[in-house]
Each structure stands twice: as C-alpha cells, then as structure tokens.
Length: 217
Length: 217
Image (cartoon, rainbow over all chains, first blue to last red; front, top):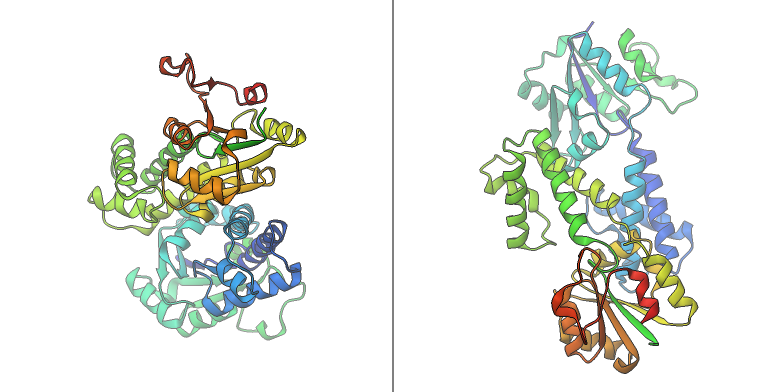
C-alpha cells in the first residue's frame, strides 16, 4: 500500500461540473423571474460562453451576461442571479458518496493525505471547508497556475516532501491524472459518472468507479 | 389613510444589526477553529473596528483583520471566515415578524409600496431577494450615498413621483425617520427591540413596536 494519497479537488472530492451547471441554471432562471427578457436556453448558453471567455473566477459574469444580451444594467437582475447562484451552489456542494468515510479509513491506517488544487487559494479553501473536508488533510496545496500540470505537481511534491514512489494520485480529471503520471506518480482515475468503463483506460491505467475502491489499491 | 408607504430596509424589514453581529461572531469563531491564534473577544472586537474603519461593503475585512492582529496571511483562515459569515448571514436574513403579512395587506388595500435604501445597489437588491420581499414593492430606490439623508429622500420622492402629503415613511433607524421628517414626510419609528417605548418619541413622533400596527395608522 501507499504511504501518501494525493487528491485532486474539483470533480474528485465533489461533483464540480454538476454543481456549477445547476447553480448557473438556477441563476439564469431567477434572473428571468426578476426581469431578464430572454428565454432560459439563450440565457444559459450565453452565460456558459461568458464563463468560458473570462474564466471561472471572474467577478462579473452576470454583468457581462446582460451586456452580451444587450440588456440594460439592472441591479435587481444581477442580484437575483447572485443570490440563486450562491444558494444552489452552496446546497450542491457535497462530497461524492464514499469520500468522507474513505478519507477517515485512510487516516486510521496512518496514511498521509494531501489535497491538490489550482486557482484562487481562498476560493479553493472555501470549497474544502464547505464540503466539511478541511480537517481530513495533512496538507493542502493550491497552485495559482490553473489547470494542474506536471510542474504544479512537481512543486507540490518537493514543497511537501512527498516521495513519488510511495504515493498514489487520485483524480476525476483525466488531464490531471496524465500530468501526475508525467510527474512520476502512480495514478488512478476516479470515474463515477460513466456507466461503462472507458475503453482507453484498460491495462496500466487503473480506473475506479466508487471512491471506496481506493482502499483496495 | 395614506396612499404610499415608504420603507427603509436595514433594521426595518429585517434585523440587520443582529444578523451582522451573528455572522461576524460565527466568522471569527470559524477562523479560530481553522488556526487564527487569538481569543474570540479579541477577534470579534478587532473585526468590528476594521468594519467601522473601512466600511460595511469593503471586500477584504478578514484580510485586514489578520493584518491588524499581526497574523500571516492564510487562505485557510480567510476562507473559514468567508464561509461561516455567508452561511450564518444567509440563515439570519429573515423578515421581522409581521412584515410579509402587513405588506400583503397593504397591497390588497391598493397602496403603493416603496423600499428605500442606501449602499451598493446589487447588494441591497440581494437582501430584498433573500428576504423574499422583492415582489411586494412597486418601486425600490437605492441611493449610492450612505446613509439615507433628507436629500436622498427628496430625490427618491421626485424620481418616483410620490406626493409627500399622502405618504408615510416607516423605518427602524431613528436618523432615517428624522431625515424623512425633514423631507416633509409623515413618519413612524418602528422600534421592535425596545422593551419600553422611548421617552423622546411621545407626542408628534409616533412609534410602533409591532410591524402590523402600520395597518392602524
């Protein structure tokens, strides 16, 4: 077994993709309820475009949405988006099933647990805390270079004095798993949403579909 | 009876003072739980000082708190404060008892309802929406000059074509009531927290202790 377990955060400890999509949908729904004069599909797709262009962490997605839709700036509509986004985002921020119990089991076995993420450090910490997972990790490493690359992982390994040979990297994001592989780590892809195991991951690239399976690796 | 009712927002439609104080207390409690090395009283009083100095709407209260306490900037501690503040703030944002039912009764009687506040327009709208009260008002006027003065009220009156003679101004903030009086409005002070009616408000300055009493004025 490994002595150190390194986990990605987004789409690994919780379903970030679904959470964001739900929150964005709720936001545009409430903006329409409060006066945004477009249909829900137009609003949602335009919001997705805005986020893709200016990045996830930009502070003014809803202002830009109104601008792009040619709608006059309106504090009521913006506020409606912010409130619905936050409420739904908060409610949907829960660990994947099996995450807390697996982390507890690993701690009981004396394993070292590291969380690794990229983005704004305060925002990544907010997620860990809202998930109720902040106390499980011996170390949390947030890179300001987004997304996670092999360089990020190498910096984290040396900063945290982790020996790659004894460590397992777990992530639900294929590009993160690949980066960790290039950084010399053993990896596993956590793939809970796929009904059939992906074809390209047989052989030397292990895939788990339930988080608890980490305990058998 | 009056044809138009103009309401303050903070400490009138909801208990802003208590809500903020609860949220700040929860924030410093969680910051301490996540590593802030001071006692709760020091943390709380220092946070209050920071807010007083930089204003309620400044975006970096917790960073400034750490700085003032001589604690190294730590994303975990900041994030813990933000999460606890938002959670408790959200949970404590509820209308004073009697507010929704009274607003509905006034609407039924065909009255015009106006909400008046000062600060950042999006943030004030967020509060109205989180309170679930946004649909009750025919008009919402947010002044960017904080706090509300007689000038603010005069601008609102002309912007919304309100005739002072037919209007009643209701607020839980004595200075707002005074400003409205100077702007030529009839006023009432909503004073739900006081066990005994204040002495200086007898005679021509009416005070109500339950929001529903507006219906008898």
